[in-house]
Image 1 (spheres, rainbow, N blue to C red):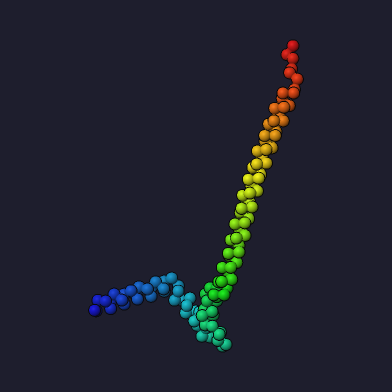
Image 2 (image 1 turned 180 degrees about the horizontal axis):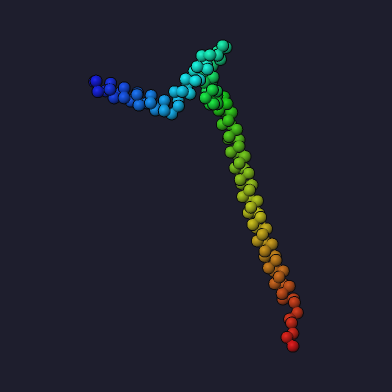
Length: 117
């Protein structure tokens, strides 16, 4: 039983050191102090903390998700249009190259042969 408590305490201490070394304890302390020092307490302490930690609120997050979804659809549409345009351009290049080759061939065939006399 004693060993279990020691292991549990060691895990807690390890986690505490991790939070301190990563700066999480300092960041949370600063935000909580800022909240404490507010003369007019915000209606939502959680939103205050999220804002101070640069986290979007739930409504902001949902709005960002909707914008992302709209932009993803627009991106996919533009990408499809781009691929189609590239394909059309390649087809036009091929047709132009064939047209130039047949024009050159026709021109070469119609040219009078030089007399080497």
